[in-house]
Image (cartoon, rainbow, N blue to C red; front, top):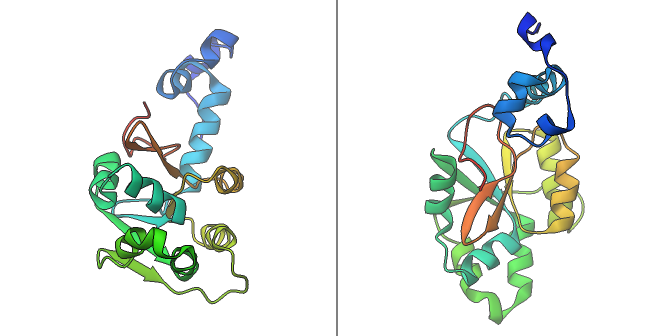
Length: 180
């Protein structure tokens, strides 16, 4: 996709690099091309959003007394279909009696179960493999290692908790709530 001639008048300077995305995509031709490339990577990501929920995300939401489904819809301004994999259920069950409320939340009928047919017992590997195959998911996690692994996969947004709210790291186009 060719950029308009008005973009060539601006150069990427250190002062424009710290401006919001909407501003620097209009001012910097290299940044605009990167943004267009990222938007074209994840064309499967449209409402209703499909969200893979991690064990720690459920636990932290429970500790902060946050309603998972409602706050996800508030964050993304659209309907959300939340998924829990078999490995996440196994992790919560292994945590024992202390996390029985998280287990009750995970067994809520609003969450859909995703069966796992691949090898391994680690939920993070399951998420990375599933997101690599199908880029239609948003990964909801607070785990730093999982976030680091997901960021290496282009076009996959990450939902996280900050200041008793849900935020997304990256959403294609203008979808989703702005980051605060």
